Image (tube, rainbow, N blue to C red):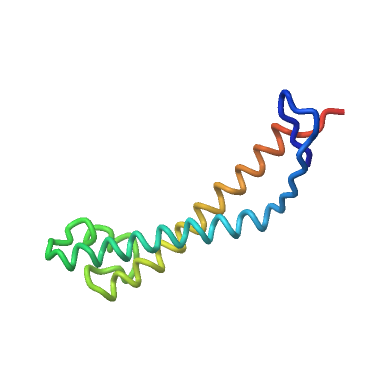
Length: 105
């Protein structure tokens, strides 16, 4: 795929593989979401605060509780949801960029 920018005489070639982008972006977002859920749970536990928000989220995420073990379960759920969400963002980005920057014949 060639990207032409206004004012440039040469084109920049960018090789994109939709599956690679889906996988790598999904892994990155999944890791960040999972880490946020785990560290958020653990931080609240260490500060001695009540887990009202986490208790309500336990209805959505099976096995997620306000405990150190629940933080690990939260990491797994956050990773799953983040992987799917991040992968879909990358897929839609690839789809729309192909639609916008397609070659005109």
